[in-house]
Length: 98
Image 1 (cartoon, rainbow, N blue to C red):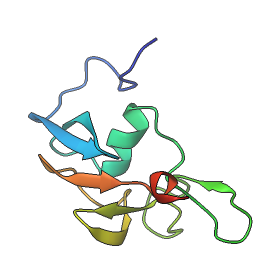
Image 2: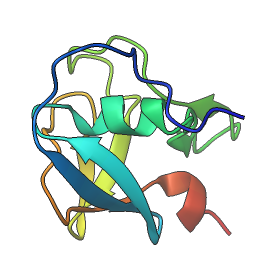
Image 3: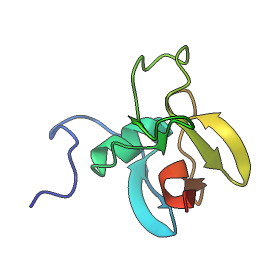
């Protein structure tokens, strides 16, 4: 099974590593956190409070707030608007749910 869903033959920045839910996740400088998560096959980032419905990327431009994650212990960060940085700690709410 392919573990990196990025398009081949695209120029990329320097290779970096994020920690996502405690696991290393490869990334490239210039990618958003959402792009990194999507390339790793992570689609559900949180669930709704009322119904538990899964949420992930929807608009991709910071308007819908469906892609909220915790980054470096700061909750409610938009994955689609945040550039990945080497060593960044990302936690999905999916992981934090009891």
